[in-house]
Amino acid sequence: MTALAPHPDRLFPADPGERALARRLHSSVADAPIYSPHGHVDARMLLDDEPFPDPAALLITPDHYVTRMLHAVGVPLDELGLSRPGAAPTASGRSIWRRLCENWDAFLGTPVRFWFESEFSEVFGLTEQPSAANADALYDQLAETLARPEFRPRALFDRFRIAVLATTDDPADDLAAHLALRDDPTFTGRVLPTFRADRYMHPDEPTWRGRLSALGESAGVDTSSYEGLLAALRARRQAFIAAGGTATDTGVIDAGSEPLTTAEASRIHRAALDGSLTAAEAVAYRRNMLYRLAEMASEDGLVMQLHPGVIRNHHRPTFDAFGPDTGHDLPAVGAFTAPLTPILRDFGTDPTFRLVLFTVDETTFSREIAPLAGFYPSVYAGAPWWFLDTPAAILRYRQAITDSAGFTKTSGFIDDTRAFCSIPARHDMSRRVDASYLSSLVVSHQLTEEDAFTIAGRLVSDIPRSTFRLG
Image (cartoon, rainbow, N blue to C red; front, side, top):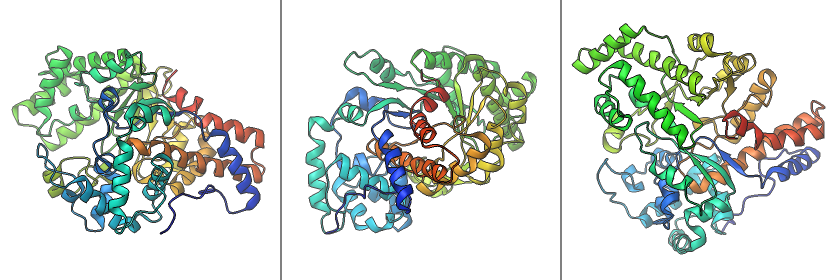
């Protein structure tokens, strides 16, 4: 049986001298605390601190990086624990785990395989590569391990050296779990809510009206008017700030941000409520709302993360059967410079405003994001995300961004994950790639060793803390 332990020099350069330097650079930051300013772990998990139910529910079902690849090789999603919204899953944890093991080679060469090998070996102590032959034995070992107190969520949070973990939350969320964690003297970490208002930007979606009502109840504001919606969003932003939040997140198909007059936006808002909204009006409303969210960020200082360029729920039958975030969000061509002109014209040099740009179209790194970050004090180049948080793409990001924006106008690594136990593996991957990139600059005499060690430390500490105003 093939051993599972990953090679200690993984992702380091082939040249022996450069590899030795990369090894030392990585060693200097390998045990540094983790700042995770964008992710999707549920705060309630840490508040309740209950044992994880089974290996598959922890490691496979919630992670669409995993389920999408298994689906791509023919495994039905309902065999991976996904179910229709509101329905109970039909597959057992053991059968889900067997499907992963049977298709283990599907992940060869992917970052998912890298993360799994790291967490299986370093977190859970597995010593064999998964396979159909050993699936049940590995499942039993993992289940026994997860039952131990040191594998409860809070113990792992401490073991992973997580200093800050940001979640992603609807503006109408009561943030009860965040507040309870903040006030719990037995919990020493920081779990911060992130304000995500996407669902209120799309008046053409069937759920928009209902969500307006829920938001209004949460904020104590009548949201039947456009101005009421803006007032409710402002009120909830303050609630997020009071709960420790430092950032917002927005995911839209494009970065268009043309503002509307209050009268025109109010007219479209009413049209959406009475059922006469046109497709063009919906686009205009969404772009205006992006501008208004930037305007709010310039007022309250919440860092604005922008994730445009993803075609959400590409396969309608899968969405109808299993709902969103089930692996079929796909990249679109990206653009920032022209679409963001209204926002950057009005807020780009405002010291309160901060905008972190993410993309799944890496051609925009050198063409648009880096030049924008290289001029506007407010703009930062977000780390490679979704299809790009891979070793090769992280290296290409550094090569594309650094010439125009340097290191300090970047975000620090973003793990963007629901898979809690993969967080240290994902951050270690980034630290290894950065160590390799820095070593290449040293051997080509573009950086001194002293500068390389300084930057390696800053990339995992004060750069993410400063970018996201984490204190």
